[in-house]
Amino acid sequence: MRPLRLAPLFGVALATLTLTGCATMRVNSFVERGTNFTVYKTYSWAPAAQLATGDPRLDNNEFFQERIQSAVEKGLGARGLEKAASGQIDFVLHYHASVTQRVDAGGIDEKYGYCEDCTPSVFDAGTLTLDVVDARTNRLVWRGWAESTFDGVVDNQQWLERQIDEAVNQILRRFPVGARL
Image (cartoon, rainbow, N blue to C red; front, side):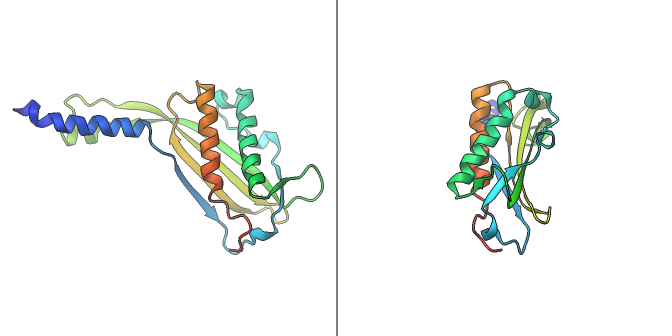
């Protein structure tokens, strides 16, 4: 009798694990109150030394930084903002990226009877953050970030590029271009 009663719970647990593996990104942003985004028309990137992630898997990937910058420039260009070749800029862009290992203890599954031998699982979690710093005041005026499971992404270049494109797209949806806050 017990296996029959656990069968539906096993199905729910399996569906939950499947959905977690394909989980959508969590995206959020911060806006400095009182910022007049209507004055922002041109930007430049922070010096390359300030863009290092600290993760050799990303820093040693020659296409990683290029892909992030390309995706951001495309997104900002679509919003009417222009990368300045020289001269006066309105804001400076920084990005921060990290991939860290996280542990899911699995104990919650055991509590509800989803498994008899719940073992911890280790997975990669990634975060991409974009910062907009006012060039005149050197103050952070906007930050957007995306967090997602990155299991296997770092080792698969095509998947990494798709994740970067998706993260940048979702982050920039929150950027208040032309707004007065």
